[in-house]
Structure formats: structure tokens, C-alpha cells
Amino acid sequence: MRHFIALCCCLFGLLSSQAYSAESSTSTSPSANQPPAELAPLMLELTKAKYSKLLPVLKKIEANSDESMLPLFRTMMNGNLYFIKTNKQLVQLIEDANQKTYQGIFSQQLVADLSKRDVSKIKVNNHLRSYLRNAIARIQLTSSSAEVRKNAVRELLSSLDEETVTTLERLYSSETNQTVKTEMGLALAINTARQASLPNSTRIAAIERLSGSLENTARNVLTQLTNQDNPAIKAAAEHALKKITQRVERFGFLNQLFFGLSLGSVLLLASIGLAITFGVMGVINMAHGEMIMLGAYTTYVVQLMMPNYIDYSIWVAIPAAFLVSGIVGVLIERLVIRHLHGRPLETLLATFGISLILQQLVRTIFSPLNRQVSTPSWMSGSWEINPVFSLTLNRLYILAFSLLVFFALVMVLKKTSLGLNVRAVSQNRNMAKAMGVKTNWIDAMTFGLGSGIAGIAGVALSQLTNVGPNLGQDYIINSFMVVVFGGVGNLLGTLVAAFSLGIATKFLEPMTGAVLSTILVLVFIILFIQKRPKGLFPQKGRAAE
Image (cartoon, rainbow, N blue to C red; front, side, top):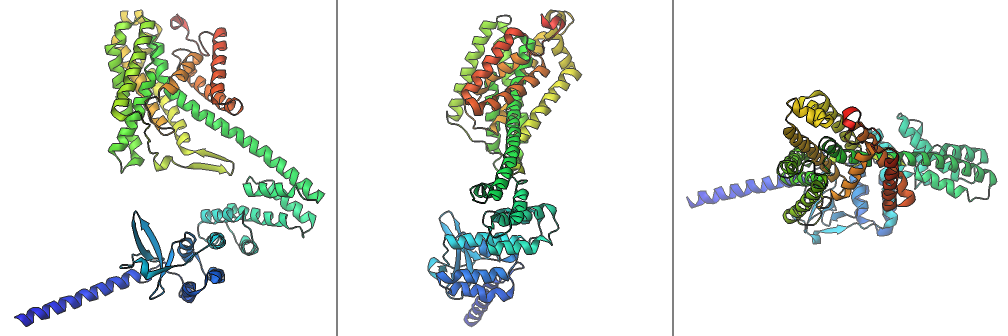
């Protein structure tokens, strides 16, 4: 029996060792994305070459490689390339927190039981990093993806050496994508314009080609050419720079316009709720900014509850913010404002006190520190139109969202019974009450609707700035300016006023600064109200009374 147990143990140990060997061979075996076998001697040479002899080896690897070698070049450029001392296998260092592990360059599989003493680093300097960066871009020129090829050409624009130019000339005629071919032509034109040994006519033709580009590299080359002694080249470069400058100024105007529309969209969301409450109830609600703040904090809380679903959290935050701010608005109207109807000064003071209470409540719950709300991945980044003009996606989405909310509110006020009653009360409260309209209920619903829309504005603002207790105070004055400028209770006037003030502010800021631009806008509105006391679009009929 004792011998039988010993035999079983031996068999178990043998099977375990075979399983471990199979696992080890699997972790180090080449995968489908392994480099060509003929490059193995060159890769082995990397582990043996002296520091000063690495560049010739890398050039040989690049000359005989394709995209499969990109992991090796990227790892080496980042300074994470090592090799195992015993078998010269190349591995990549992976640092996670305080733990260091090693994995295969191409297989991406963990190499077990390796310590710092078992490996040796292949060192790189700035010269090698520069070469590797260009080599990666040159290899990507043969990628199957047109976008990758285009980005590779752009990467090479500022470092055009003889080898890069030769590669571009070889690939230019066979390139099928017109966008990539245009970028390649630009790179070749930059190289041609720099060559003092070429005829003036050839260089001037290249300079004219550069005049149609907005790339920074092209402008830098033209600026350098304006300092040359050759009068023909200097004149051509100055003419090209002038054309580029004019285009840059036009796109700069469009960029300012976009930021103005973006600010206008935020002002629209912030003021549209105030417009209907002010227009229907005649209430100066100084706590309206805190409704915006509650919406922003609701977004923050929703993200805390959905940490693994940030991309979807905003779709939950929008209705949640509307409900939270709307319910708080209804409570304020039922508990305070309805008892002060017809007394605007007392209402103003009461809502100002409520705003202070809400701010202190938020400070008590969340602390006075600002809170960061994460932007969903689909709202991050920008849409690049050209090298000098791009639209940030979060502002673009907020602009579209504000217009959607505006038109949805217009449809509610025009097509629903609630909207009919709201319009009736805003035009003639006493007559509406005589006709059986429950004006108290309409006041509560209107105040709740306006506060809910302010909460939605808070969701939008959380994607543009930090969330803090004073968030609403930054927009309450601007919201009142929009409502007064556009015409009290007029939604179309609110739309026009919001975008007008947003655009005017953004065009004034570069010349006067942020504070002075706001002061100038305020002075303009004061002077405008002197001429048109009822705003851009005054109400007509009994509503004007």
C-alpha cells in the first residue's frame, strides 16, 4: 500500500510538471502577431550590441519589418524594453502600482518567475527615441487604415530627413486615399521648399502649395524662408504667409463664434426657466441659481452611484436633476412664495434667503470643496475641422441639447393643457381664474417646471466646470439680463437674447478681459432698456399690462 501511494505521488508530480511546462511554453510561444522569423537574428543582436551600435541594428529591423514590429519600437521608445539574461528573450516591463512584472513583447503574455536580477535593460537616449518615433511613423505609412497613414504623415512633417522623404516619394504614387495623398504632397512640398540647391521656380511652386495648408509646420517653414537672402523666395514666402494668416483669422472668428454660441446655450438653459416663472408669476426668484446648483450636484451623486457606467450616467442624471430641482421648486412655491403673492420686494428677500439656506445645506452635506464630474467618453475630445479650428464635443452636445430643451418647452406650452393654462394665467390672471383655471396649481407647476429646467442646466454646466456651492451665483445675474433683454415671459426673446449676449461676451473678452466684458454688456442692456423698457420682444395685448 505504501508503494502504491508513492507511485501515485510520482505520477501526480510528473503530470503537474508536464502541465507547468505546457503552460510555460504557451506563455512564451509566438502568437499570431509575432514578427517575421528572419528578424530573429536582428532582435538577438539588440541584446548584444553596445549602446552606440544600436542605431544600425534598428535601421536593419525597420528596413525588413512591417506593423508587427510596432510593439517592439514603442516599448523601446518608452524605455521599457528588457531581455532575459539566460535565453536573450525580449520582454516588456509592466509597472502596476508597486508591482513590476514582465510580459512578452508580441505575445503580451506574462512571463512568470522573473525578478529584476533575471533581466537586463536595453537603454535608449534622446537620439534613439527620436529615431524610433520617426520609424514608427514610417512603418505606419504602409498601414491598411487611411487614418493611421494620415496621422503618420503628420507626425513626420516636423522631422523630414532623407530617409523619410525617400519613403514618402516611394509611397506617394501608389497611395489611393486622396486625403493621405494630400498630406504626403504637403510633406514633399515642405522638403522641396527648404532645398536651396533647387531652381527658384521649383521652390516657388512648392511654396504656393504650402499656402493652402494650415499646418503649423508649413507656417514655420514659410516664416524661416522669409528670412532668406533670395528675394524671389522671400517674396513668395511672404505672400503665402499672408494668405495663410487671412484664413487663420477667418477660422479664429468662427472659433469665437462657436464659443459664443456655447455660452449662449448655457445662458439659454439657465434663463429659460426663469423666463416662464417671471413671466407667469411676476416673481423675482433669487434662488433660481441654486436650482442650477442642485442639478449639478444631482449629476455628481448619480455618478457616485454608477461608477462603472459613467458613459450612461448622464442619461440618468438629466431626468433625476429635473425631478430634484422641480420638486424643490414646488416646495418653495407652496411653502413661501404663494404667501407673498403681489409683494415683489418681500418675495425677492425671501428667495434670497432660501438661496443662502440651500448653499449652506450643500456645504454641510458635500463640504465647501468643488466636486469633479467625469465627462462621458462620447462627449470627450474634439471634432477637428482643420489644424487651427476644432469643435469640442461637450460644448457641441450641450448646444444641441439646449435647443432640444427649448423646442420641447415650446411644444409643451403650445400643445398641452398645462401650456394653455400657463399662457392664460400669464396674459390675464383674474380672467383665467374667473374661467375656472386653478391659478394656484398653475403657479406651483410653472415654478416647478422652471426650476426643473434650471436643474437640467446644472447637468450641462457640470460637464463644463467644477461643481460647487457657488455654481448658481455665477449665472443668476446673467439669467436676469437675458430675461429682461429678450422680453419678460417671451421664449423667443429669451432664445435670441441668450445667444446674442453669449456671442457679444466672447467677442469682447479678448479685447477687454472677462470682467470688463461683462460690465460692458450690462451697461449696454441698461441703455437698451431705457429705449425699449419691455425688451426685444414685448408681450402684446393684455399681457403687456
